[in-house]
Image (cartoon, rainbow, N blue to C red; front, side, top):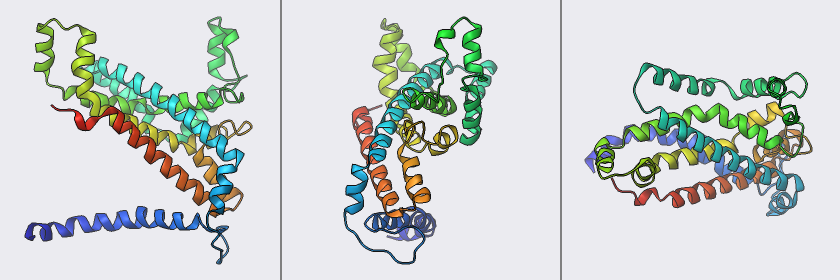
Length: 290
C-alpha cells in the first residue's frame, strides 16, 4: 500500500493526459454518433441508431471500407516482407551496414504531405520519372496513369506508404534479430540445420513478438494514411482511393454531418481493434518461450 502511494504522483499526470486526450474524446465522439449534430449549431437532437443505419448503407462508406482493406493488405504484406528481408541483411555491424540503415530510415523523417507531393510528380503520366524510366529501359507497355486509373490507384498509394515507412520496420526487425541468442544459432548450425531451417525453426519463432509489433503498427498506419491519400488523390478518381479517414473528414468538414462522421469513427475504431486482436492471436506471441 505504501509503495502504491509513493508511485501515485508518477502515474496520475500520465493518466490525466490519457483521459483528457483519448478517453474523453472517444466517449464524446461515441455520444455524438447518436445525434444529428452538424458541428456548428449549439443544439442537436438524439436520433438513436439512425446514423449507423445510414452510414452502413452509404455506397461511399462501403467503397471506403473495401479500399481501406485493400490498402491495408497491400501495405502490411509488402512492408513487412520487404523490411524483414532487408533486416536479415543488415544485422551485421559495420560502417556500410549502419549507413544503409540510415538510408532506409531517411524517408521516415519526411512528412506524409511532402512524400505525397513527391510521388504525385513521380507518378505523373506525362512528366513523371517512373514512366520516363520505364520508357528508357524499353518497357513502354508498362507505363500507366498510376493514380488516375481507378483499378490500380489504391495500390499505387499503398506502394508509396510502404516505401515511406519500411525504414521504421527494418529497425524493429533488426532489434528483434539482434536479441536472438547467438548460441542457439551456432548450436543449430552444428546440428546440421540449413539457412531455411535456422530461419523457420529458430529465428522466426523468436522474432514473432517483433513481427507482431510490426504488423499491428503497419495496420494502424494503413488506416491513418489520410494525409498521403488526401495529398495525392483526395479520394478520387470516382472514390477509388477513398478510405475511412478521408470519408470521416468529408462527412465532418465537407458535408457538415458530424454525427455521421462520429459514426464512421466508431466503425473505424472497432475495425482497427478487431483486426489488431486477430493479428496478435494468429501470431500467438503469448505462447512463445525463450
